[in-house]
Amino acid sequence: MVTQQDIRAVASSVVSFHCSACGKCCNSPPQLTLAELFRHQDRFVGALGMRRMQPAGNAHAADAAALASRLGHALPGGDYLMLAVQGLDYPSLNRCPALGDDNGCTIHTSRPSTCALVPLDAWTPDALQSVLLEKRRAGHGYIGADCIAAGPREGYRELVRGGRVTDPAYADALNRRRGNEAQEKAVWGTQLFRWLLPELLAAPGGIAAVPTADTRTLSLVPALALLAGASPRSRERCLDFAEAQLTLIRHNLAGALARRQAADRPVTAELRAMEAALQRFAGHLRSAAAGASSDPQRAAQVEAYLAS
Ligand code: SF4
Ligand code: SF4
Image (cartoon, rainbow, N blue to C red; front, side, top):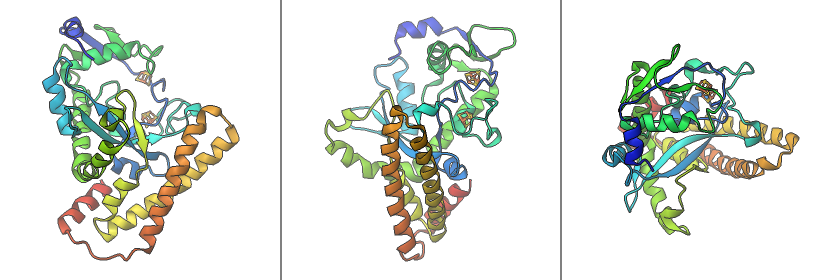
């Protein structure tokens, strides 16, 4: 929780940033949009990520709630559900699958929009980005990289000043990512949330059991089913995607079998469950009659989204 004391501490502060491309923060696959995952279907295994966001009680709660309402899904009780595609890989590898041997990003020109705004965060109101950066400065992902500096520093760019993101490129990246997340919500998130909410309410512990500090990952199949149902062309594209993901999952499972790391076992179990779900989904797509699209507007929306 961000307190008024935190806010006072950074209200007029400058935070500077310089990325030396050390690769330290690329220690796991990123969040992506579903369209980005389709583009990188041979590189990232995608899961549906779910996390409970709690804007109430923080300083700038109204800003945080407005942002959460734009990007996420309102839960009973005042929290919001983040539904996002999360890249999934083995913890023992401790690296993003797109990280090159030279620690550079091998897909830099088409990297996910979430990578372009590092070290900022789309769900954090602009007024609180300085607080977040101050925490990240000494946090696990960045420690030792010295890329975030309190105050001005030679060779670093000013990223935020008080409650504003002052670097135009980063302000753009932040807006782009937020726009992407709002689009995810419009194309598949809202419908998926309608399906999920009764299950979340009925599950042991109810909504309170959805994690707030980390992301729970599930199979992407329900989101894919929403896209596949839009038109025959979307269905074909989803089938191609499912087959590519099955190939990648099997490749990753074989790698884990060779490495034999105890820490990887939970991800192996998860990948096996995802493999089974994708296999059923692909089988269904292959056998179901193609049919015509019943909603041309929806078909056009999904086809444009998948091609984006
Ligand atoms: S840890 Fe910092 S310096 Fe290293 S790649 Fe990430 S942002 Fe750049
Ligand atoms: S996609 Fe590129 S920038 Fe993003 S986490 Fe992976 S290596 Fe880093």
